Image (cartoon, rainbow, N blue to C red):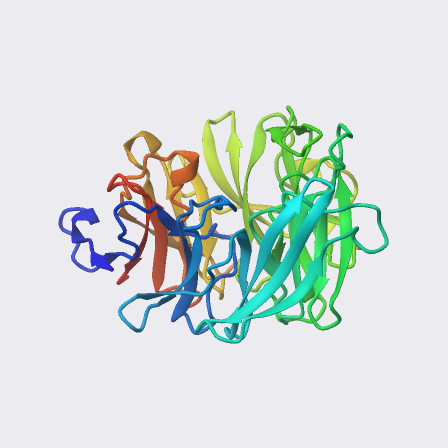
Length: 408
C-alpha cells in the first residue's frame, strides 16, 4: 500500500487516495466492476495480481486472487495459486470465495468450481464439469471471465462457448450451478449470447433472487473456435433479465433504435429490481445513464419496447460522457468514470435520487486517474457495499495498478 495524495486535484483536502498494489514489474487490477467480490461488512474484498480489468491469461503462473483486508493496513493475502483461476464471486455471507479453474478446450477439457475461505483455509472442489452439460450435447469452453452468485448463496452462474470447433455460428450459453445439489443446467443458449455479462439480482426477495441480468449481442461474429471477431452488428446489443431456470425472459428498454446504443455496461441498482445502463447516442453525441425496470419479453425492440419506462439519470449533466459505473448495496451512491478520455478520464461521484423519475444529485468530480484508457487499463470504478470507499484502476505509473479513494 502506498498513499497517493499527488493524484488529488489541487486544493482538495477531504479525500485520501491509496495505491493498493505496488509491484513495479507485475500489473495488478481490480476485478471487473460488476463482480460480487466484497464481503458484506465492506472490510474485505478480492482483487487480482498479474491481471487486467477484463481478466487474465490462464497460462500465467503469476496470476493470483488476493484478499485485501482494508482494516489491517490494506494487507494483500493470496488465496489462490492454481493455474487457470477465473470467475471469482464472494458468498453473500462473506465466508467464501467461489472461483472456477479453466482447463477447457473447444469440445473437451474440464471446468472446475472451487471455493476457499477468505483466510485461505478450507479449500474444496464443489463441481467438475468434464463432459457434456447434463441434458445436452454441448461441452463448455472459453468460459466468460466473470461469474455471479445468487443473493441467497445457493446458485452461481457463468457463461461459455458451446461450439464443437467445426460449426460456424455455434452457440454460447449461460450455465447455472446449484451449489447444494451439485447440479448444473443450461439456462439459455444461442449464437447471439457471446458476451453475457451475467449479474444475479442482489435483491433478498425470494423470487427476485432468481433473476439474472444478461446481455445479447445481435449481429456478433465469431469463428468456429469461439474467437469473437465482432461484438455486434449495426443494431447493437440489448439487455434482458431471465430467471435462472430459463423462464421469464424480460426486456429492458434501451438502445437499438439507430441512434441510441448500449455500451455494454449495466448493473442492478443495489438490491432493487431497477437497473441502470450507459448508452451512446449519435444525436446528441453523449454517453447517458438510463434507469429502467424489465418488462415482459415481446421481441428485441430496445428503447421502443412496449411498456418500457425510462429515467435519464444524467440529464442534469452538461454533455454527459459516462462509461463504466457502479452503485452501493443500498442503491443510493453512484460512481463512474467519464471523459475526456484523452486526458486520462475522471472519477465522478453522485447520489442517486429517491424518486423513480429523479436525476443524479450532488455530483462531484473526485480526481483524474491518469489511465491511458486502453482496454487493458480501463478505470472500472466501483464502491464498497457501504458506499464509503471507491476503487479504480490506472496505469499512471507506467504499470497497471489498483487504487482506492475515500473521505467523502
